[in-house]
Length: 79
Image (cartoon, rainbow, N blue to C red):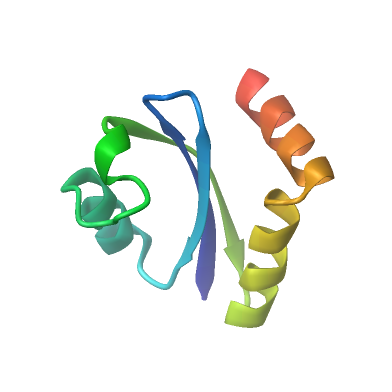
């Protein structure tokens, strides 16, 4: 089981990532242990999707990072 997650950073940007253990990964983010989000705290978890495999999770993460995927994220965030 793998998770694809989306964080809202204090800058208003969205961070997309994958994790095997979501709680540990979110703790790493909130403690400032992740270089990409360290200077953009606080952050908020806005979306999570469970995937059956790491490959599936990577594909979904890649989609969310695409142009159409970013539009979907905006829609998710509005709701």
